[in-house]
Amino acid sequence: MASGPREKFDNPTIEWIDSRLPIFTMLNKEYGVFPTPKNFNYFWNFGAIAMFMLITMIVSGIILAMSYTAHVDYAFDSVERIMRDVNSGWLIRYIHMNGASFFFIAVFIHMFRSLYYGSYKQPREILWILGVVIFLLMMATAFMGYVLPWGQMSYWGATVITNLFSAIPFVGESIVTLLWGGFSVDNPTLNRFFALHYLMPFLICAVVFLHVWALHVTGSNNPAGIEPKTKKDTLPFHPYYTMKDTFGLLVFITIYAFFVFYAPDYLGHPDNYIPADPLVTPAHIVPEWYFLPFYAMLRAITFDIGIPFTDITIISAKLGGVITMFGSIALLFVLPWLDTHPIRSARYRPLFKTFLLIFVVNFVFLGYVGSQGADAMVGPIPLSLLGLLATGYYYGFFLAILPWLSKFEKGRDLPPSIHESVLD
Image (cartoon, rainbow, N blue to C red):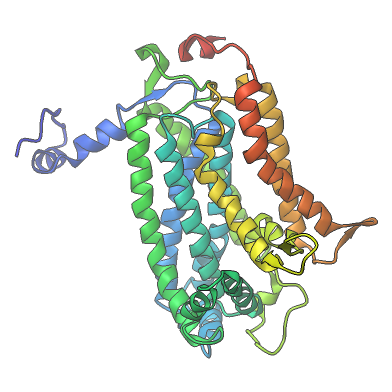
């Protein structure tokens, strides 16, 4: 089968391989001479940073799995043995444990950049949807990984979150039993979560491959939100953006290394250093920080929804919380059809920019609400009420504000080309 035209490589070994399997030609085409908008800023580094963190998590996870024992009687002790007796085990565990947080930091910034610059709009809808799928898989993987140390917060977090599925009508109890592998969170649950936690990163890799493929079909968006028109609008990916990505990655790794070596437990919960005890419930059960905004939305619904003036309940408070939490992610899948404004970038949409920045502050506030107890107060105001209002703004942003802005926001004039916007 003909491989098509290709350039010869000076290195004889690379040329020998490429003439039989043109992998280097493909890499040069997709990551060397690939035309990239010349106005990228450092927000565009976080895709490469997220890729680096995924590889770091897979490698460190495989090494940890070699010494971990997935059994309720030995899991906690096996983690302690990794920390104390395995050569450099403490380092690998801290890399993996803090890596989860920094992976989410990179992805959250990557998603914010996509929202701010409209990277979810035509023709990049599939690219965005695949990104949301990756985010969902990350959440599932992280949740199951948090259970594996089998500390107090691991055990009770698994109990609370898996119990949520029991609110689903008709099939909820069956789903919970399937997740548990029995009738309570026990050894079969831990085994299932360990197997899935090991498997799902490779599934994430497969979806990342599709995500990158979709990116190279449609091309990258850019801060101006306009498509390249001439060669003046683009630069080859290498060396310009490989160098820029490398610099951004080094800065990110420096911050990451600080936490690994000097504050390894800062982002965790102290209760998880206590062995799991089904007979002792922690005073305040909280998930990891990257789940807190969604946890706040889950807890925001404290009332049943039914037919007025009757005792008939249509949606219980528990089911309402589950729908609200999962619905907050489902909204991201339909975002390209909620925001149909012809201008992509928030640079040229002042109203959209204002509402989006409020949305980000609101999302961070939801994280704070999720970190506090259910009965916490802000002065005379219950924090749960503020959480409900913040949840309302989250949904209102997608379902009301974006469609309204799509129809009525005029926006500023776009530059005629990427090249001219850079010169300006």
